[in-house]
Length: 270
Image (cartoon, rainbow, N blue to C red):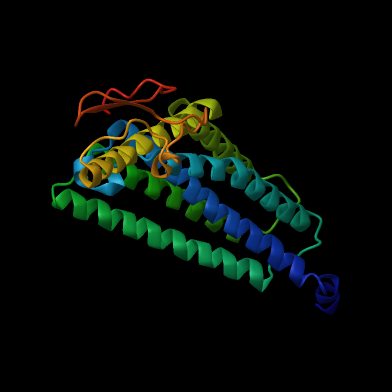
C-alpha cells in the first residue's frame, strides 16, 4: 500500500487539474450543444407567441456554435490525456478527486433528467405541448442521459490498459453530433461575410430610425426641415460600410425622404 501511495505522491495537482478541466469543458460542451440545438429548433419550430424562449436569436446561435467549435475539442483532448495517464498508471483511478467529481456529474445528470421529465409533464398538462418545447425537453433529457450513462460506466471501469468500445462509441457520438449541429447552424447563420453584411444592414435600420426622430425633433423646434444633414446633430448618422452620411431629401415643408442602400434582401417576414 505504501508503494502505491508513493507512486502517486505529488500528482494530486495534475489529477485535480485534468479532472476539473474535463468536467468543466464537458459541462460547457453540453450547454453549447444544447443551446445550438435549441436555436435550430426555434428557427424551424419556434412560436414567438409562447414567449422569449421560443424566439430564434442569431447572436445566441453564433455564440453557441463558437463554443462548440472551441470547447468540444478541448474536452476531448483533456479526457484523452486523463485516460492516457490512467492507462500508463501515472494517476490513481481510485483517487478521491476522480470519484468525487464523477459522483458530482452523476448527481447533476440525475437532477437534469428529473427536471426535464417534470417540465415535460407539467407543460403537457398545461396544454403547452408545442413541437418546439417537446424537442427541447427531449434534447435536455438525451444529453443528461448520455452524461449519466457515460459517468456511471466510467465509475465502474477499473482497467484503462485496454481500449473501451463504450468510450470510443461515446466520443465518436460526441464528435458526430457536434459536427452535425455546427454544419446545420452554418446553413442557418450563413458565411462570416453574410453575417457582417447583416450587421451593417441592422445598423442602417437603427440609423434611419434614430435619424427620423432627430429630424422630427428638429422640425418641432424650428418649424421647418433642415436643408441637409450638415448640422452637428446629424453627423454621426453615417453608413457603417461606406462612412457616408445617410441619404436625406426634403420634399415639402413637412415631408422628407430617407434612403439607404442595403447589402442583403430583407427577410420575407420583416
